[in-house]
Image (cartoon, rainbow, N blue to C red; front, side, top):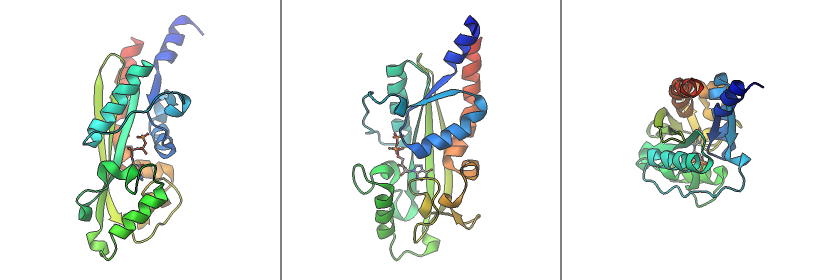
Length: 212
Ligand code: ITT
C-alpha cells in the first residue's frame, strides 16, 4: 500500500463507543455505504468505562464520545438512547438500560414496564424511542444528530429481532412490534436509523477533510 492510501485508510477509522451488540449491528448497517473501518469498545476490552451521569441523552452521548475520542485519539461516535412512555411522564428515558436495576436484562426491564402499564388501555400506551448520536473528533470538533420514533407499548413481548424494548414497541402503521422487523426495515423507520441518516452526510465531510 502506498503512503497516501495508507494514510487515508488509517484516517477512515471510526470508533463506535458502545458494547451494546444491538446498537453495533444497527450502526454498522446504517453506515456501511461509507466504507469506514469501524471499531467498537469490544475491541478495547481493557479501557475503563465512564459513568453515564448526565441529565439528558445529549449530555450522555457527548460525554461518552468525548471521553473515548480523547483516550483513543480517534474519531468517535457514541449513541445514547432510550424509551419515553407518555403515561409514565417520559420514563424510563435516560434510565432505560437500568430501569429495573443496575445490570438489568432486557427481559427484566420489559417485565417492569409491563407491570407499570398494567390496566392502561392501548389508546393511552403511546411512547417514543429517542436516540442522540454524538460524533467527536480528536481535535475537538463535535456534531450531534437526533432521531425519534413513535409507537405504543404492547401487552406482551412479541418478536425476536432487535434488542431492548423492541418486543414491546408496537408500530401501529405496520401492525407489528419493532422486534418483528428485519434489521434493514428497523433502520428505515427507527430513531437510530434517522439519526444515522443525518450523520452520514456529516461523516462524509469529515472524511473528505481528512483526505485533502
Ligand atoms: P452504551 O451506553 O454502552 O452504548 P447501553 O445499552 O447502556 O450501551 P444506553 O445507556 O444508551 O446504552 O441505554 C439504551 C437503552 O435504551 C438500551 O439498553 C435499551 O434498553 C433501550 N433502547 C435504546 N434503543 C433501543 C432500540 O432501538 N430498541 C429497543 N430498546 C432500545
